[in-house]
Length: 173
Image 1 (cartoon, rainbow, N blue to C red):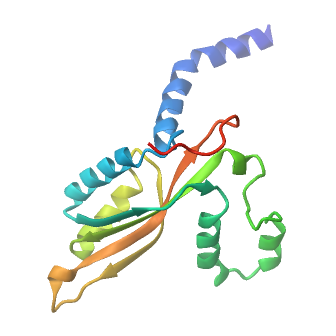
Image 2 (cartoon, rainbow, N blue to C red):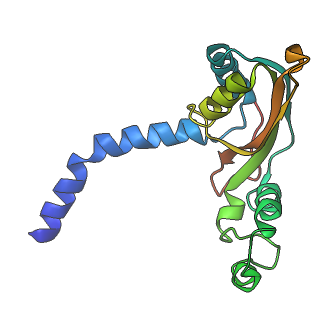
């Protein structure tokens, strides 16, 4: 009886779980599909008042590679306990679980924008809250008071792709 009640409770939550799955599939899709991501960024840029001048994406790589190195460089200077950090890293230098490396891929992204510092900051914030998950690892600002037309910034980070274990590598669309 208890198991049956538990199953009924889980069944009642099925519509909520499916809606959450749909959101997650948009945030981390099965294909690289950077056209949709770029459309999202263009809308966010327009709302923030910045102009995207350069968009660069590299090839997808298994999770635990490039983004682990990027975050490792940022945190290595502040890591006082490198022994525990080393203990959680597997032989390939990645902190990712072995099964994750066959299913989750990261795509390095670089975006250069023009706009005021406030506009660039608003865009940086919005880009991390869009439908497609974008992990910003660094943001730099450029410009000067003498030449405000040169104001802008560069965001670098990653979007992610999840693949079924039966698929080899992510498909670019």
